[in-house]
Image (cartoon, rainbow, N blue to C red; front, side, top):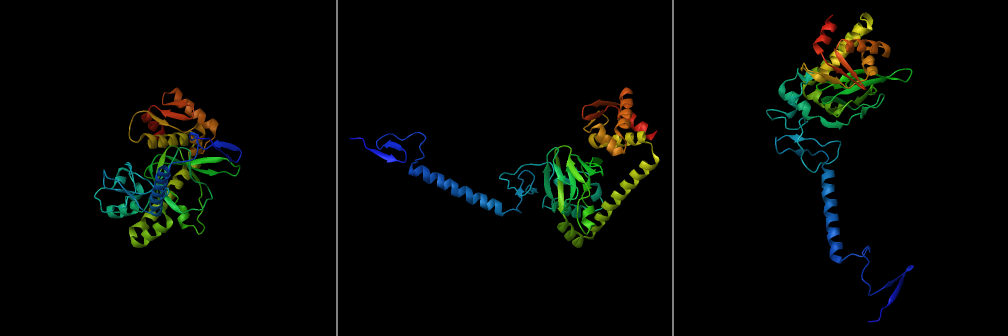
Length: 315
């Protein structure tokens, strides 16, 4: 058979030549298969995206897990902590956390509050919100540690609080006519919070009077903490304030264990917590290191003898 040539653009292709391996020409069945998979995937994704408020059930424990940041999850994943809608369950998987601020609520109301929250994850160094941002939710810390910071008049960032499991933050903006964040909160390690929107909190306050008392307890706890720090700043020397803050932070990272505790904070951050200058902080920590109470590392402080540190705080 005589070979024919046909001009296509700037190329000359033989009609009887075998198809080029990189040619875009596809077999009709291949095109139909790809089109079918494309249609099914679009339909499946559309169904998942439309159910933005749907929660994925966990088969192993029977609890319902919220979606994370509005992103659909295709498979149920087991988490140690969760905010679920199953408020009738005898035991909620958030029960592993000592929710100090929720102790005043009865068990059903506590589960209702936790079930109304949204589970959010933050990577190490990720900012939860910035100072002066619009506020729309209060956060309960479920996992990890976070630092609360404020900017000074000179533009420096000062760490004034370390938050751990069971703590809450972001409630001050709830009572302000202009809900703005008063500080910046950043994750010091991978962290999980249960965020409760202000609108949901308002509905819970109307439906459950005990939740109103919860807000009062949250504000009272903040006032007590600020009052204690104010008295310390006015009447205690900087050396003792540094010892107290170091002991508090080591308890947050080590719990009740009596072994060594590594506090992943710089000397500057510890000084900020105590309201002391870096030279003073370094002098106090060097003295503790010479006595074998702590070991100083780059970017962290290892508490070797917490009992000795507590004895120095008690004085």
